[in-house]
Image 1 (tube, rainbow, N blue to C red):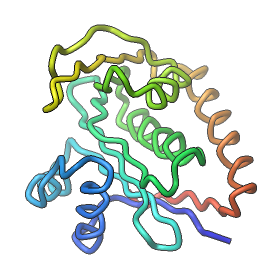
Image 2 (image 1 turned 90 degrees about the vertical axis):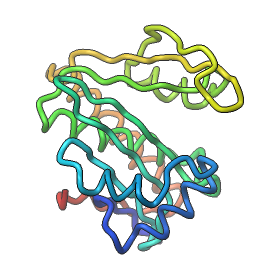
Image 3 (image 1 turned 180 degrees about the vertical axis):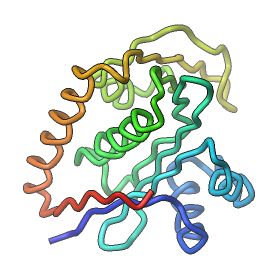
Length: 180
């Protein structure tokens, strides 16, 4: 049985997060960039752990009443196991705790898996950024309002239940924690 937990990024986990960033994001953020996130009161950077190994990370910035989701990444060995969904739930719950009312993010226009995940949470396309990525690909700007509505909280609970039901198939034991 693999134990799944999450926590905020700490200095101790930074080397593993940098390796994950390299694998998943091609070295998008530097060590200094991650340290800024650790120190920022407007940033929530969560790390997903499988038996204490870093397998995912997600970050949001609190800007006025908006949660700007800057990063959501799961190690390729753990794709298609509802772990990205689980991490997104945790980020959106943090946004709710911060009393943020909207969430936004950019995603590659070609990333159908990510688009399907975000649409499942009620994100809708609000626009696009031309040649946003280094390779020239466009980004879609996704937007989700009404984070504080009771219906959205129920949706998050339903999606988390969907995760835990799937985790049994993968021999995962989910241990949510409140150490952020």
